[in-house]
Length: 142
Image (cartoon, rainbow, N blue to C red):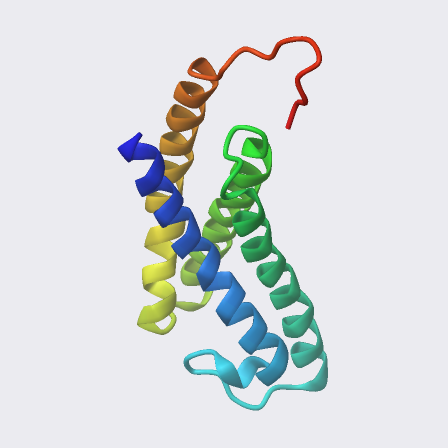
């Protein structure tokens, strides 16, 4: 199924972003982000806490990658949480202005691209569930 493979590539790429940037954020701190600089101790502390969740989102996407049907809820939950985060970015834009273009691009991805990926994922999973082999008695279930 070509759509399934394409979706898996997109999900792998989407998972790679929080894996790489989350790990870098944990190790380097807020200075890692575009426009980042030295910050107060409490901001650094909270930033590293939040990027640990970001890193975990990447791990979760990769964990669910090869079992799209069985782990669909995990994938969709992670993607929907990122969409909610996009609304947080939008609130920031309205409150304090536009950030670095990297984050403007992330805002568009989160509010436009990710809802489309959630829809695509649902279609692929629905098609995959309909094409499963029936399980017979005595056969191990994965």
